[in-house]
Image 1 (cartoon, one colour):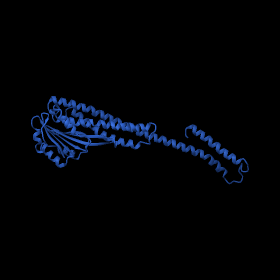
Image 2 (cartoon, helix red, strand yellow):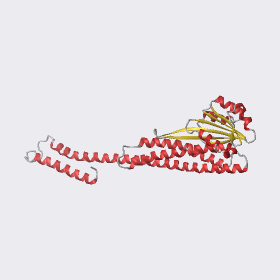
Image 3 (spheres, one colour):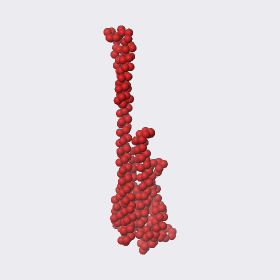
Image 4 (cartoon, one colour):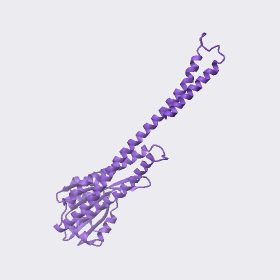
Length: 328
């Protein structure tokens, strides 16, 4: 659905809502541009926008279907930016993802949102309170939306890092509550999904920081590029964080498997030690249990106590040796 369709002139929003069929004309007026915001738009809604602003069919298809990787494309006179937003749910220890697709050209910006991972209502309010930024036009809107998406990555990264620290503490600290393999794997999936949102975004932001998209005039373009370079710094930092988290989780999983293997080996040593101890009396009893007529000690009165003493002595010696060797 269409959430907003507003005209901004000289950094100020005109009162009221604008009819979609007049949006293109309003955006072509001197010092004005149109910002249209849609939430999970239908093909019919985008068909009207495609006709109004001459949007490329491939970009329109991506905007309707969504599920695209972050990218920046240029189609003639307008650019198309795909963003993946993220929000950390602390109760579920999961990351919710969404998509924001941005069309920008001379005199218009179109934002299409899928999912509710990132809200841009606050972005609009902040821009409308900053008349100087709105005077720049569509590039300022693109920067504001991009900046909000990137800023929202930080709490996600910190939330995942806290979960990873808890796993690490349970794995190597005292009083662990069992094998955390399942939680490590789950966190690995969350970090991988976040990596698919952050890592591909570095190059598009780098292109925006170099001025490879929408330009108004030289002075304003320079200021916008400074703002995009600031966003680029944050994206690169988030990318490095995510990469380090993936490596740390891989190391934690390997360490957990190593601990499981060591524990299994210790169990096998204990079992082997007890089997060896039990084998001695079994061997002695088996020998003296054979029904042969001529066997030593069969007529000896002290034979029975001697056999029991031999069993006890052998078992005690083996128990002492295994205990000293750390097998028991």
